[in-house]
Amino acid sequence: MKSQIPKPKPCAFTRPERSRRVSLCLCLWTLTFVILMSGCCPKPTGKTTTTLTIWHWMTDRQPVFQELSTRYEAQTAVKVNFDLYAPSDAYTQKVRAAAQGINLPDIFGILGEKRDFASFIKAGHILDLTPYMEENNGSWKNNFFSKALAVNEFPQGNNYGINPGFYGVPIDIMTIQMVYNKDLFKELGLNPNKPPLTFEELLDIGKKIRSANMHGLVSGWGELWMIDCLANNYAFNIMGQDKVLATIKGEVPYTDPDWIRVFSIFKEMQEAGVLASGIITMVNKTAEQLFANNKAVFAFNGSWCVNVYKAMNPSLNYAAMLPPKISDKYPMRIWGGAGSSFIINARSKNKEEAVKFLKWLTEKDQQACLSEATLNLPANKESLSEIPQVLAQFADDMELTTHPNIWGVSEFPAVIEAFNKGIQSIIIQEKTPEQVAAAVQKIKERELAKKRQ
Image (tube, rainbow, N blue to C red):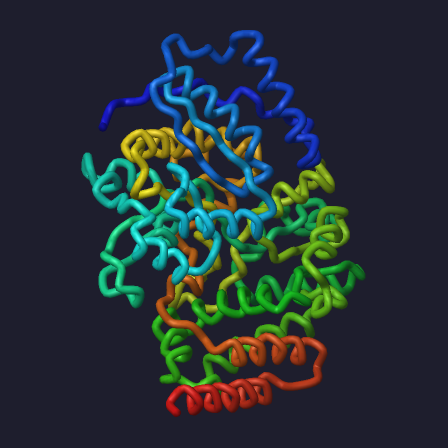
């Protein structure tokens, strides 16, 4: 059950000329064929003993999944079939139907909220991986970023009634940060290797941006959740996690001075010239195009942007950075950690082989191979030295990540909407931070009253 799997060769099919996802897939398919025909990837020397079936929805990863499955079969005589079902809605329907019919594959994934995950565990569909994660002094568990594991973990005393433990294996991660254009930094007379570390430094750069008639920060703030993300980053930095969560629980009002400070950040950025014109109606695709085409100095975006920017402008000269801090009292927290994961069917006759395969798939070399081919962040923290520099910059702050899915408490949707739309109104100078705080708190009290009824 614990047999060692030989390490494969490093990923041999990363090609620097890929600039589009379609080109990437075609390139990988072609090179996979060449490798197999040329003997670079050895064929199995023995008879296949086991076949594992994996269902997934990740279209961009299918070519590299198949290449890796061929490599694994060559080493172990275990055949692995990756069955792709897309789009994600179709995949989810297939998994739910299979769960009802008790005919799920050996390995699969769940797209949904934590309560959906819990329902599958309660129905006996998912293998508890805690013993495997913890064996050998936690050697498998310790390969991962702790925040990558969190999405698949149910802690002691969780609200879902699930036995504490790990029930899934992350294969990639994401973080949401800021990026800056190094060439535009040079045009502004700034050091391209020294992004702003403090909020005051950011505001100073905003003045230079305005004087140069450039676009400042672009982001998809027409999509309200991205405003919520940055506002939460600064809330954690200004008042700390405990006070943020106490606010969600209704113990601290949004009219508290610390929340006024959070709202004021957006007023100050707008007045200093940090924010690009039209940002409150901007969708993220437009923001990505502006940044990729050297039209904006900053962007607020997720690690997925590395692949997007490469497709739009392979020569883009940029780097990732944390949002500049306001306070030294609490660390800056960024959203992240949640990525794609695989889980094992508890009823599978091939459970032990499935565990071995997922251990192999999440080793350093395979993780680096996946990351290089798809430009997704690896879940294995040891793979960072094997990935592009800008992607590693998104990953090196993984321990600073947080996410609403792991807070254990959720804000009312009506409050979130009022909060984010209120920030939009501050940016266009329709309302003051104090007015928005009062309006948000009024809705909070209304929702709390409904809940108590």
